[in-house]
Each structure stands twice: as structure tokens, then as C-alpha cells.
Length: 149
Length: 79
Image (cartoon, rainbow over all chains, first blue to last red; front, side):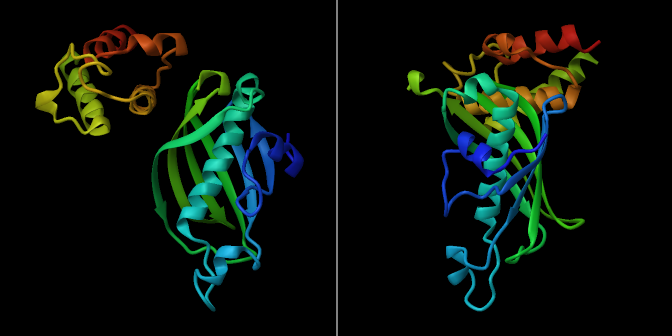
């Protein structure tokens, strides 16, 4: 099962220029896994300053992309909660970066859910360009239903 | 074995909460006494599940309010 951008937008509250998932290539709720893709175009706003003449995707943007893919995994595992359009917020991130990502390189993010409950999720993410791991992260995020604020 | 399990669980909780091992009393309530927030609590649960390949049902998580309760659960599940 794959998700197009409209399905992604129906889950994620983020919008351009801060929407960092183009496509979900695979959703497997049995193994709590989502594989998503993002290709950063040369026109992304942050390349102007990061860095002039040497565009590299900022690490924090890679974290955000993996976090957004983690929310998509949560929505796949907990559709009844996601349908209520809750607020998602990051609680903790552990990350490492191994190689720079440049404009036009498709980044494939695989997210594995370690724990998904009604008000939180824990996931591990690996981002690759081709066969090379460019970043890894572990996320803990909270999920707050609007009627529980 | 039981002592090793307790030592491992103490280490997991200490690392996640950043509370020194000598300050982690077995019956201290995570929320009321140790002021652990819900994000750290779920991190403890996930670390526990990952290390011991067990699943703590969602309805059981609110009951895991102290080290002694986690240890009791662990001893029951990890034979």
C-alpha cells in the first residue's frame, strides 16, 4: 500500500514549505513500518543560506522529515486516533548524521515503530540516499487529542 | 538472575531519567516522587520492551509507576 501527497496531507498538519514527505512507498501495520520518500528540490528556501553555492540539506530538516514520516506511521497504526486530527509534538530525538544530502537526491526514510499507544509513539528512523545511510534517529512524540487539551 | 534483571532495569531507568542510581528508590512513584513526565515514561516502556522482547499492554502502562512495579512485571514475564 502506498500513499500519495493528498493522503499525506490528510494526516500531516504541515504544509509547504515545511512539508517534507513527498510519497509513502510502503505501509506495513503488521511490522509497524513505513517507507517514505522526500526529494529536496534546488529551490527549497533553506538552500539559499545553507550554504551559499554549496547547498546541503540541514540536519534539522532531515530530522523533521523523519519525524513527519513517523507521524504517518502512527496514523497508519492508530487510524482511529489520527482521524481526530490530534496535535503531534516531539518529546525527544536522538540522531546521527553520516553523509550530506544534496538537492535532487531522493531520500528514502524507513520508520519502525517501537511503541504506539493512544497518547504517544516511539519510532526508529533510517534515512538513505541510494544504499548509503545518511541519517538515523529515534523519536519519542506525544499525541494530544484536541478534546483533551 | 533476578538481581541481574533488577540491576539492568535500574540502569535503564537511571539513564533515561538522568536520576543517579543511588537516588532511585524501588517504591518511589515515577510521577509524584521522581517527577518523570509521560514522555520519559513511554521511553522507559519502549526500552524495556526492546531489551527483553516483551510487550507491555497499553492498559498496563499506567500501572508501571515505580521501579518495583516494573520489576514485578518483568519477573512475571521474563522467565
